[in-house]
Length: 402
Image 1 (cartoon, rainbow, N blue to C red):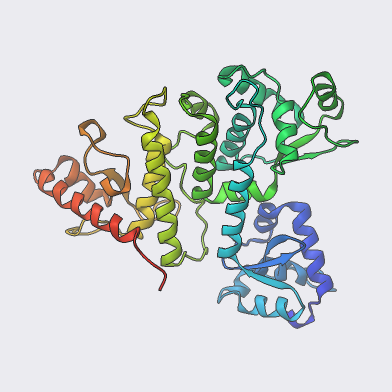
Image 2 (cartoon, rainbow, N blue to C red):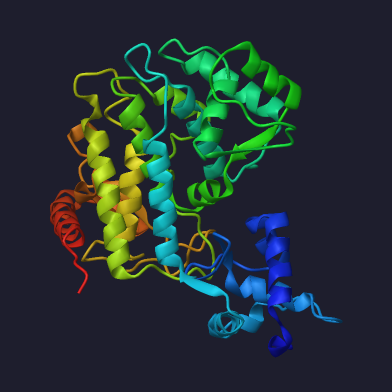
């Protein structure tokens, strides 16, 4: 290993390779996980510091890429070298929060057609489709034929305010809003106005496209960003509308909709950051609880989007430990994803007046869940769990940064 021989030139070559391959492919190719804490900042983009150093080593004469195990004790050596070479290192927590706020700001400020008095649904339908693809880890960039076919079909089935099946309108609008990329076109992208000229531009250029990489990456990894973007779109565009069938079609009716993408070796969030995330998820849940008042909305007894958001909040709160204070033994094993074996349940069933809210939900190991569901002492246990859920909820929304 010759870390001391690496210069800025090799770092730039590694950065360029990451740009060519895309972050996920780059990390997978060289056996690295995403960094959460130490990120290299270069020309407005963020890179995984250890992976960049490892690949930069391969650009030294006669050398190959470094194995991820070289950095098994942490990123200190990589960070020190990058700083010595004049590169900026940023805190990943702050960078992710900045990306989160940028995404929500762009979604909140979309320019839409309101000629009918209500916002048309072209852009939110297209974004829901793209968010669903990011959640499932599907290809970010698609051919125009594939995009046109998918978005056209969704507009035909779910355009509830007179939207025509014209995918070119929302794609052009999202491109100019900074949320969409378009490649392989010979001239500038027209604005989302007019009719035949816009249709002809897409037909002639056949551009490949999709969400910008920063938005896709955030929506892929962060459950909170995912549900916050969805909640913002629903609030602006779908007041009084039944979005359930659309969500079924795009794959957003999912109990894991708010879950972060699990990754080995990712640094845990600090308690205060986790508490802030918990509070934001609770606000989204509470917002969605009130959506059925006075309008046509999805099934109020069970809504996977709302339930999934509340479920994620409870899993953050429990820190991987069964919340039954009398638990006699949580399984030592973990799930295939490497997470604790826990089941989030309503203390009081929805059919009996329970709420999709963290203050009325609890994380239980399989044994405690079975007692709560079928045990002889289940009613006594439910009373205890209801008190625990409320106490823990109150504690988590009042944690302050010392």
